[in-house]
Image 1 (spheres, rainbow, N blue to C red):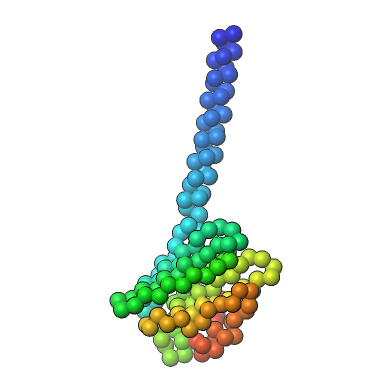
Image 2 (tube, helix red, strand yellow):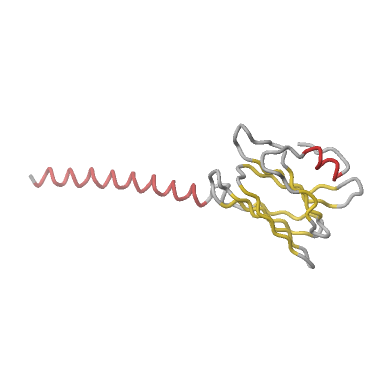
Length: 146
């Protein structure tokens, strides 16, 4: 009887060890997932941070742009994919260009936000599910390359 108890205990220890490895992988994937990591970059003299909050349909994006004089903060909702970059308009002025969209079949992949990197004024905000590429290109005065 004692022999079977030891064998059972060893099997339980191996199972527990396997579950702990799986749990550790799960925790690491949560901590280092792309949705938990902020995108940071500088545009002109402005520090830009784009952080995704949440992982599902109600995901929110928090955008902050900060320079030595001002700070702008925006929240976008129901965003699954986001990419921010620094571009210049036709007058060579720095603009923060952000493309954020949801992943569903009814979602447009060209929904842009534009922030002036000098004044931090918001030039364009997206309308949920509506393509605003042509408006963004009009504001910038040039084509947006993907």
